[in-house]
Length: 458
Image: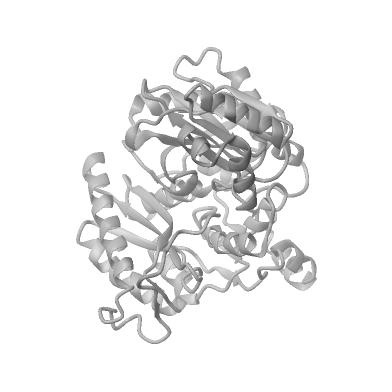
């Protein structure tokens, strides 16, 4: 199969690329970077393996085992990969490390290959990124663009310049019996967003104490916020995303539409592939997303971007934010494209970035555990790939995986992905039983039975 237009644009005509796992560097421009937030971003940087279909070099902050990249190279038919790991800890960033290692940087430059970071942190186009990563600026862009797109409804949004004003707006919404969404001007992975019901406001003793508590807990940042209309959801298709690539010449190339998996306000993964999103919704998202992309291109942005939507009960799409960078769903799209090229067309891919583990595992034990699960998933015709292997020894341990199915019909593929996901989740939970641990996870495993487990926020 030949390359699609978006792949041609994104890979600079089919070239391999250097991938930099600098999620923390990008996030630091917009959200507070506590040691915990930076550590979680470093875990998430393992997704750098999937920035383009065939990486030539990976520069990662963490230290994944070589078995991980060997597994991926076999399944995805990669060429030789130059792997550089341990480039940051919870106190530093990848860019700082690279600045202190000129020999490494010179070696990367000698490769003469395109360099793909998570998102732009310097150079041309940065002004567009910093402008439209703002949820206020993206809302203004959506409002300007929505005319002529009858399937789009832009939620109402009001700025609150101070906590006092935010409390007044929230209290007024609660008195009207309305659920409201409070947003920071910038956020990633769900940070800085809270969906608040009138019941929550009343239980907290009012809007002001509720906001003070959310700020103290780090859910919302201090300072100015945005109050946005809450759009009720619509089942499996509640959270959609449209992704596209803006080429160097400013042309916009659609990648596709995916279903995002959201827990509360926190992104957990995505499912993409033929038939995953109904044609009508996909066409509406694409038409609007391309119009937004044309505006981003005129503003100077080049590279990957997406527009996220909530589907209302009438089936209309409400755009909620734009991301001028790679995102979690981008990984699903790139994986689907590579699997189609290597193993044949028609893959539906589901990424699950923060699957809780019932025990803390050494990384080698985690990979052995996932290898066993890969065999079980294969019974459903599903391929399992490890995507984030470095968070398995955290206090709240997790693992990231991708599942892929080539079943001939969309519903059969989605059913197979559901069945495989259920098997993986059950087996991960079973790690909490110290008497039922598989032999492969062995020494170093710390069961968490009886402890509260939750996926950490990116």
